[in-house]
Amino acid sequence: MVDRQPRPDGTILAFDVGGRRIGVAVGNTISGDARDVAVVRMTSDVPDWPAIDHLMRDWLPCALVVGDPRELQDETAMPPSRARARRFAQRLVARYPQAPLWLIDERRTSIEAARRFADGRAAGTRRRHQAERLDALAAAIILERWLRAPEQGEPWRPELAVP
Image (cartoon, rainbow, N blue to C red; front, side):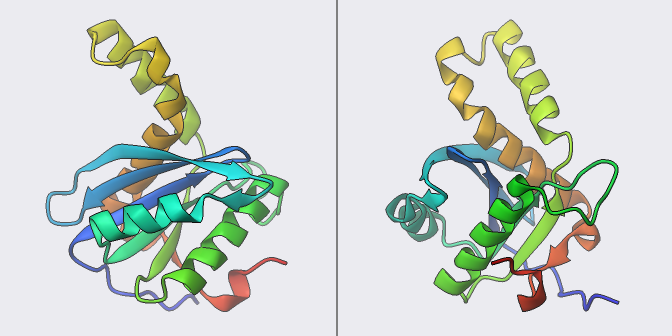
């Protein structure tokens, strides 16, 4: 059984890790709200750490959430996208040890982000040139999931690391 950490109160940063971009969202455990804030470049599986450092300084999160791209048919499979997200989480924990980290199932968040983006375009609140922000919108959905049901998140532990 996984030891569950208590959910911290305050600001949370969430990350949707992709091969070229990392979507970033910020939320608050008190209000339960989350919103997309940034897209950080990823080059050869190396994130733009100065950009992430800047976000960490600006938002001073009390915890971090990383989307865990599980497969629909096999939750234990380790496809490249999942290994990439786990490596990123491992590096976040090493770089920012003061902030506890949770992994949360991110299945179907890209579909939901695309739907929300399309709805925003139809309502006139989003523009075509903002399509890159889909990754950040997916991070906001990941964070919303964690805020609604933190018990479904998996606290980071060393055995979750991948080479």
